[in-house]
Image 1 (cartoon, rainbow over the protein chains, first blue to last red):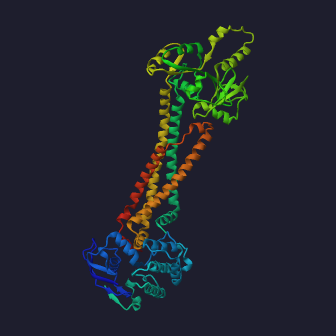
Image 2 (image 1 turned 120 degrees about the vertical axis):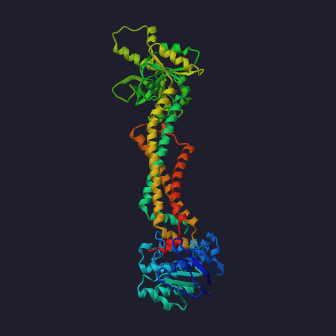
Image 3 (image 1 turned 180 degrees about the vertical axis):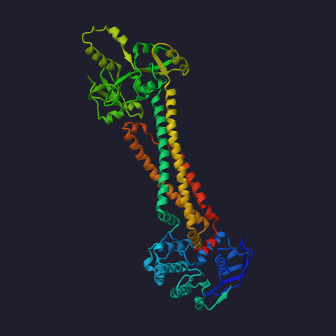
Amino acid sequence: MLQTENLTFHYKQQVDSFNFPNISLKAQENLLILGKSGIGKTTFLHLLAGLLTPISGEVLIDDITINSLSQSKLDVFRGQYIGLVFQKNFAVKTLSVLENLQARLFFSKKTINYEEIDKLLEQLGIKDCKKSKIYELSEGQLQRLGIALSVIHKPKVILADEPTSSLDDDNCKIVMELLIKQAKQTKANLIVITHDHRIQSFFQNSITL
Amino acid sequence: MNIWKISIQNLKSKPLYTFLSILTLSLSIALLLGIQQLKSSFRNQMDNNLGEIDLVIGAKGSPLQLVLASVLHLDNPTGNILYEEAQKLEKNPMIKSAVPISYGDNYKGFRIVGTTVKFLSLYNSELQKGRHIKKSMEVVLGNFIAEKLNLSIGDTFLSSHGLIENTIDIHNEELTVVGILKPTQKVIDRLIVTNLESFWDIHQHEEEEDHDHAEHHQDEERNKDKEITSLLLTFRNPSAILTLPRKINKQGNMQAVLPKYELDKLYEYIGIGFKVISWIAYLILVISGIAIFISLYKMVKERAFDLALLRTYGASNFQLINMVIYEGFTIVLFAFVIGFILIKTGLYFVFEIVKSDYQHSILQELSFNEVLQTVGLVCIIIILSISLAIYPIIKMNISTILSNEK
């Protein structure tokens, strides 16, 4: 369950401040947020992830007002409740695939279940790369690892920032299908922000900033 | 998985930087500890060998040479003095003990010292095996020599003339080992001790051979001619330091030297060399601190996205800072291990190069405090490097880094 109320944000260097629409998602409801570049999509996503603190308004996840949490509690909260998917740079480069997943679970204070890791990697089709270093992976494999890292700790909310903008049509479809499937499996809300209209068909709910 | 493992992986991902950091740091640790060890070993050696000797009396010449020759047994003697004149000094009430020593012969490079039994008490030396010297041509061996030359009680050997090992000028008289001394870590470990008579007998004999036709001296006259190399004095009362040397230096062909003063001066000269090497070591330490700083700072800057990613995984700032600290201290740990190995092997090779047998007797283990000092200094430099490197983490804005991913 995710809810926002009257979120506003203001960057120091800029004159205008951002006002974001209120959203309210029930359990396992997905949302697509569309918008042109510079409209504040990423800012909105970072507010939802607790990476930025709003000037005013609130973000509620599972009835927890995340902006009222202390920094250390917010770190723990983020580690346990949020899964982030990025456009590029999906994993820590000095660690292997398995080590990344282990680190992900370590920092979110979850126990490591190797069977679960294997199962997830198999579903995403990258089980063979388990021991590989990040630089050894192809773009597609990296993207799948990014998805794995965003769901392995069973978050409540998966936030994806332009996950498909550098992909061709086929891969775009594959990635979206995998993301939606994994979100469903982990019973999480999936929120995708993008300017990529190709993925509109995957969502029932969408808003435009 | 834990933070240590991530730190180790970070280090592994930049082997050259890690190698450079460990190399420079271990080098400076080895130099700092090595110099300190040599310095305190020399200091200790000088103080140790001084024993109770307050004043050295010998032939006129370089005072330092006289002290080196008579106290540390390193240099050549300045000449000889008449035993008769030396004996007169012994009667002075200010003097607690006077030990005459006479040398000029060696066996396989080890000096033979003709002296009285009081010589041993200067170094608190005791017998390990055998007995003390009772008559001429008997010797007691320092512990190191007995071990090194594998000599035991009852063995005999021929001494040769001079202080350096040679096969040209060998005396005919056999010396017999009657005792072996306990190890003392002092110069006496490397000395062969005999009595004055042995010396006079060996050399007298030769003179007689040389002057076969010359008229034989009268016994009394012979006694008058008897010479020793120097006289080691211990005062009954410290005020003698002021009066006695002046009195002796004024008259005749003898000089009186305060060994402590001469050795302090010598230590000051050597100290300049030690200081230069110490400064080089400090310089390398600073360079290594900079190398470690650059290595860590580079990681923090270039891997900003990775660090931000770890923050989205739930890592706190504190954990990221720990990661950098662990990285730094892994380098320090390795550097200390390698540094200690370097000193051990380095000093061994230094002594090997100068072909000195003195290594075991001269080299002293550093005290815990001295090691702690160097370790503390290294840690301060490293802590400084690490604190500078973690500054960007404290200032890190995850949101900005993540939105600038390209």
